Structure formats: structure tokens, C-alpha cells
Image (cartoon, rainbow over all chains, first blue to last red; front, side, top):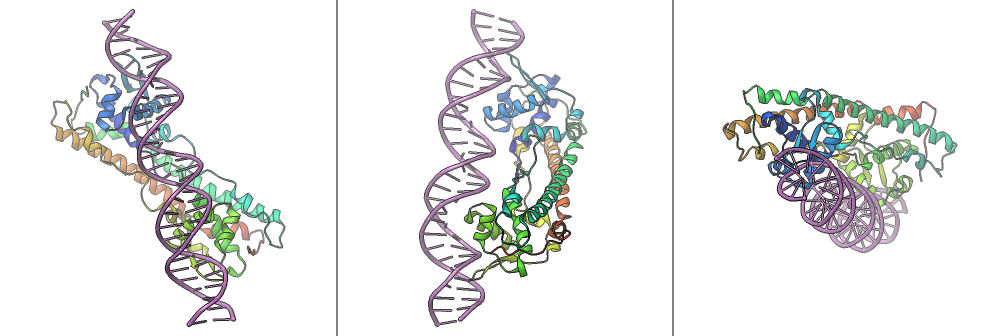
Length: 161
Length: 161
DNA sequence: TTATCTATGGATATATTGTATACATGATAC
DNA sequence: GTATCATGTATACAATATATCCATAGATAA
């Protein structure tokens, strides 16, 4: 259970775009050079951020990527879900259904199965709650919070080009 | 970022072991048959549970696996960490270190690097906190809690053999 | 129109996960 | 003490997910 490196990379890209002088668009190869990942991989990552409405892509000479909205409107959860999707950690197979087939107990099969289904459902609920806890924390932190560390040291803008 | 199916499988196995008549050891092929996974994979999974001290393995005729301790002393977190390890979701590459090399700003390179390092460290701290939230929830739920659903319906023991 | 960029999808390489098989090691019943 | 049947370990293999490369279509400024 590990997170894609694209999440950390995306966060760094967003900081770079915010720091860019006059918020001019930054080209993909400049970003991939800095991050030392392939341009194609970075473009696919950026595409996800575009679809999520976090950055804008300008397809033109003098084009590139720029932030689509203010940094205080972009949470870590937004970025996480843009990359990892909004699905669940656990993919509930119907394990419980299969376990009690052909079991040798003197209890009716249906009873055992029903009870186990409840137990498994309980587990899934707990994992789901744990996942909500995780995501709630990510939602409480924005790119603007991140930038505070940068601003506080009187550090200004950078031209990446 | 998905959880191994081995986690859910492990939980089901633990329930089976607890339900087993007189807590006699259950052989691996009986478990893998029920779960419909390969015996080799299940053995690897069970080995992790043994190493984590959650189950005991008896290598003998009439041997198999049984619980190593009471179900109220086994949390979902114990099982999760036995399978997934106790490492972090995110593996901090030193991305920030590399980004600001050779940058064209008029600010000294060291300043930019230092500031970004702080920002990235902040992100990692937040992700770490989110992960703690997730694990804290898993720690609050035990196999005994799971079994309550089973016991409450006056359901007894099962002989899996 | 043309130069220069992004958008997209298919082919390839690498890493991770799950499966199959064989054999070594270990614990108990007898 | 030894036969027996279990777990433990190693290897090769298949399936899947992740990351990269490449070729080409599409959009915009000049």
C-alpha cells in the first residue's frame, strides 16, 4: 500500500507554478527536467491535474501549464484524488460468500453465511472509516498553507525558463 | 494506493481459526480451499502472521495454524501491519533537493533550496499525520469486536476439517 | 501558413503481486 | 527413534500495475 510518486511530484509542480514570475505558463519539459522524470510521464500526470481542474493547459507557442485557481482553493486531498482516483483502498471481494459453502457444521449454511457477512461488512465499515480519517486530514491542508513557509522568508518569484 | 487482498483474507482466516471447534489447528490447504487462493500464496501470508506473533504454526501430523493470543488482543492494525509492513505510504524521495539546482533566479540557490525543503517537509508531516489517523482507527477495532457479531446470534463452533 | 507547443494513444520496459512446483526442515504420534 | 505429514523456503513463472518512449494529431500565436 504505497502512494504513487506522482502525488509528491504534483505538489512540487504546483509550488513551482505558484512561484513562477507573473504566473506565466511553464512548459512541460522544464518541469520534467527539474523533477528528473520523463516528459511523457509528467505530461500524463499533468493531464490528470487538468481533468481535475487544478491546472490549466495552454496548447500553443508560449504555452504550458498554470494554476487554474488560487492556492487556498487547492487541498492536498484534491491533488491526491486527482492522481490516485476517488476510489477506496480496499476492494471488497465477496470472500465471505464463498467461505461457508459446503461447510460441515450442523448449523444451516444460510445462518453461518449471514453471520459472516455481517462480520465482514463490519470490517469494511471500519476500514472505510479509517480511510475517511486519512482523507479528512488531507483536506485540511492547502497549497496556500504550503506556500506560507515560502512567503514567510521573504522569498519572491522565480522564472523557471 | 490499494491494500493487498491478503489483509482481508487474513481477517477471514482469523475468524475461521477462532470458530474452529476446540481451537484445534487448521491445515493450510483447508484454508486456501475455502478462500479460493493458491496454497503457496496463503502459506506466505500465514508466515507473515506467524512472524507477527498473531498465529502459531504447528509443523506436524495433526498440525496446522491456530491463534497465538486472545481475539481481544488482536487489532485490525496488527493484521494490517503484519501484511503491509509498518512503513509509510509515502516514500520521501529527495525531490526538493534536486529541483532548485541550476535555477536562474537572482536569489542564492541555497535560500531557495532551504525554503522548499521546509515546505516539502511540511507536506510529508501532513501525510504522516493522515496516516496516523488511519492507523489509529484500525487500532481501535479488534477481532473480538468482529466476533461479537457472530456470538450474538448464538452461533457456536465449526469443524473445518 | 508555419512554427511551436500540448493532447492522446499504443508499444515497450520495469516492478509488484500472485501462482505453481519441488524440496528441505520440523514437530508429533506411535 | 523414526515414519509421517505438516510448515518453511527457494525458484521459476504468469498476471497486473507502474513508468517510459515514441509517433502523430490538434491548438494557438505570429
